[in-house]
Amino acid sequence: MRVCSVVFQYPYYLIAMIYLHILRMSFMTIPFICFYCIGCVNLPKESDLAIKTHTPRVFANKDLLESIATTKDNEYKDFKSTFFMLFDDSVLNELANHALQQNTNIKTLESNIKQARATAKINTWNLFPKANAGLNYNYSDNNYKQIQTNITQNTTNMSLSFSWEVDLFGKLNALRLSSKQQILQSIYNLQAAQVILLGDIANYYFIIRQTREAITLNKQITQNLEEIYKLTEKKYHLGLVGLDSVATTKSNYLTQKNTTLSLEYTLEQNKNALLVLLNANTLNFDINTDNYTFKTPQIPHVDSMPTNVLFNRPDVRASVFALNSSLYQRYNKKMALLPSVNLSGNLGQILFSPQLGIGDMVWQMAGSLAAPILNRQTLTQDYIIAKENTKQAFYSLQNTLNTALAEIENAAKYVFITQETLKHTQENYNINKDTLVIMESRYQKNLIDSISRLEYENNYLRAKNTLASANLSKNQAVIALYKAFGGDFAPNELKDGILQTMRTPKINKQENTAIDPANDL
Image 1: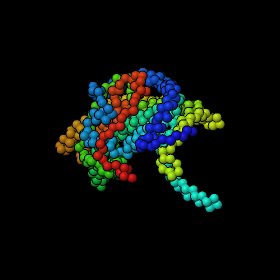
Image 2: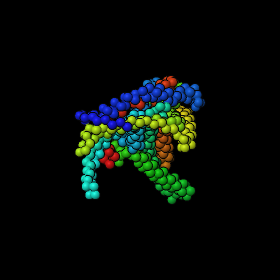
Image 3: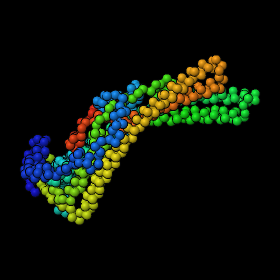
């Protein structure tokens, strides 16, 4: 310990002194830089990940992916513009924009990104020295009568202390890099959730449109069956038909009424499910519109390799960054087994004292080298746990890739089948439509009775309802294809370094005019 008397003249004198003594030990920074550069983790290359996860070179349904395309335009910019290009519906686009801003799951994931950024800042600042300032006032008055002495203390002290764990082996830096990977993971988790959200919004929207049309058609069918039942009952009283014919027509009528009621419940379910995704109480469109027409989705041509497509999916990228984060955390646990170096310093100055001189200063510099001995077994087990976490992260990546590949193959087949089914259903609808026109003409000429005419009309209504269901299935298949590709049908070529050298994007400070009640808590 060293004591020196200095006149305190400037308010930043203490800070200047402490930095002066830190500079005196600048020779410590040389090994720090060396070990800092050495203490790093080699992340797996993208090409190595593709090999280890057995990513195929071509899609099994490559021919189907080429045949289902309805447009040659494949230069879609992002998941949002791709969605708007697939489904040209202004109402759906408004719902999608509203959901991206107000959906509670999206808001939660956006909050996770902010938390990840805050954690990264904490781990970054842990690399630097920590300084604390204190102000102490002490007063005491003791009167000793035996020796006729009165001792009075009245002092004010100011102190400044610092501590620094020198990151010789990159232990702290590994945590910083791990948190950076967690930021990227949370960002792509958000993007994956946004793609799924848009798909779910479209699914509920199209179901509502189809169900509304189905209710209208089934109500008309119900009315026709009721009329057929009444006409058959009249024939029964006239002795023209048997009781079994009356029972059959009445059973058909009652069954159809139940079908219509079931459709109304389905409409209510999907309407409320859509409201949950929108985080709203009302829908901004009229669900009772009967003249909705399904448009043909604009499916782009796909000619990318599976590696490019799969590693471009946001959920796959999130899994890659989770794996990287676990590698950095494993390295941190491994370096915890090695000795750690700590530097500390204290600087104090008397600001006021009746006995001591004002400005008297005390300073101290100390260093320590600590190595785990008795708790080494605990640290070893922590490292083993970290190793297993890395394995689990890789298994999770493998499962995500397998699931993504299966979704793409299934979606391609689903789109192809629904397209073919729609063609057959359209042909069947045209046949029933032409038949109804012919039978209506024959009915006007009294060549068929009212019951036959109503039956032909019901056949036409059922064919029209089936056509609407086929259009819904086609759109649902395209939604599945959109999700399977992660909202991007034209991914960039995957090269080594694209993911592993990706930097954390800056905070996007876009103004959100919507009021968030969570901010007022």
